[in-house]
Image (cartoon, rainbow, N blue to C red):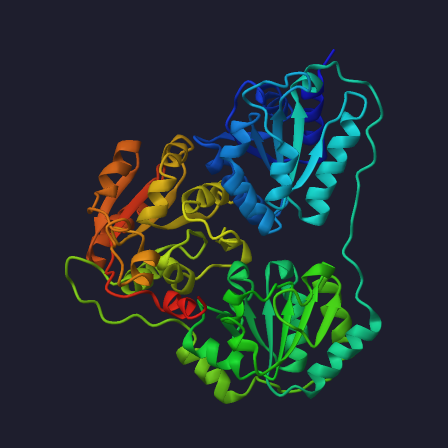
Length: 537
C-alpha cells in the first residue's frame, strides 16, 4: 500500500507538474522520489535559496507551475528569500515543505511554518490527514495555478508516512479572471477616443495578450511600453518605446512623460515603472487588472477596470474610434534613430565601460536568448542594452530587491527554455552570494553565459554613501574567472571588447558547460538608473 507522501507526488505529476527543484533531506525524500517516479523531472540544487529561485524562474519562463521541495524547518527557512520574491511577484510556485509531526513538540526542526509562509506573502496550506490528502493537494495546486499565488503546502511527517486512503480525486479547482464591466470598457474607450498622445504600459499581467493590446493600440494610435518584468512583450513593434521607468531610454521617458492618457495593462505602476510618479504625472491614468486590490494601490487612477487584460482590450476595440494618436511621422523617425540606449566610444584601459560591454554583448549573443538579471548598480545595463525575443526572454526576480538571485534565476530559465542561450547578468557581490549554484549549472551541462559586472564591491552602496567609510562595501579585486574554472566552467577576464573573443569561441563550440566572463567594469559614477532612483530616497 502506498503512503500519503507517494500519493502526493503521484497526484501532482497527474495534475501536470513538469519540473521540480529542491534540496532533499529526510523529510522531503519520499515525496520528491514520488514526483520523480511519476515522471516529473527534478533538479537538485546546492542550496534551498537557489532551488527556490530556480523554481520561480522556471515558472515565469515556462508559464507552468513551479515546484520546490524542501526539508522541514531549516530547509524552509533557507528558501525564504526565494519564496518571498516569488510571493511578491505573484509567481505560481508550489512549495512542498515537510513539517514536524504534531507530537514532536521539542523537535529542533519545529517552527511555525504556516506563520512563516503568511509573513512573506505566501498562502499557507497543509495536508491535514490521509483522508483529506487528495483534496488538500488539489486545492493548493489550483490556488497556485489559477490565482498565480505562491503556496506553501506543509506535509507533516506523520501524515506523510500514513497509508494512503483510496478515495476519489476531487475535480480540479478553477478560477478565471473576471470579465470587464461593460460600462467601464465604454469609459476606457471614451478616454482613448479623446487622447492625442496615448501610451500603453504592459506589465506581467499582460503576458499572452500582445495581439489584443497591439490591435487596440493600432486603433487608437497608442505607443507601447512595458514594465521591466514584461520586457520583450512588444519586441519587433515599430511603435514600442521599450521599458518604462528607471531603465527607460531618454526618448522613452520623454514620450511617456508627454502622454495625455496612460493605460497600465496588468502593471502595478510601482515607483520604478513610473519614476516615482514623474512619468505619469501629466496624464490621465487608467489601470486594467484582474485583481481588485491592485487597482490604484501604487498610483491614484482616474479609471480602474477590473478584468482580464486580453478580454478588456478585445472589448474596448469594438467601441474605440480609429485615430492617429501618438503615431506621427516625427515620432516614428525618432523611434528609429533614438529608440535604443547608446554606448560611448570604447577607451581601452584596465576596466571596460559597462555600456560598451553591454552593447558588444548584445551584438555577439544569439537573438534567441533568455536574459536573467540580478540586482545592483549594474542592473540597468543588461536590462536596457540586451534585446530579448519576447516576454519569455527576460527574467527579473526583483520584486523583493534581493541581490544574489541572478545565477539561480538563469539556471531555472535555462531549464525551462533549453532552446535558448541563457545569460546571467550579475554584480560581483550578488554572484558571490549564489556561487555554489555554479556546480549545479556545470552538473546539468547548461550552455549558460554568466556575465559578472565586477566593480569589486557593492556598487549601489558605495555610490549612495559617497561620504561614508566605504571599507565595508569595497573589496580586493578577485579573479572570478579562475574561481569559475575551479567549478568546471570556462572562464575569462574581460577588460576590453577584444577579450570577448572568448565568448565568440564558446558560442561556436559545443556549449556543454557554462562560460563566466569576469568583466572588470568602470565604477567611477553610479549608473544612470541608480542616480535617478536615489532621488526617491
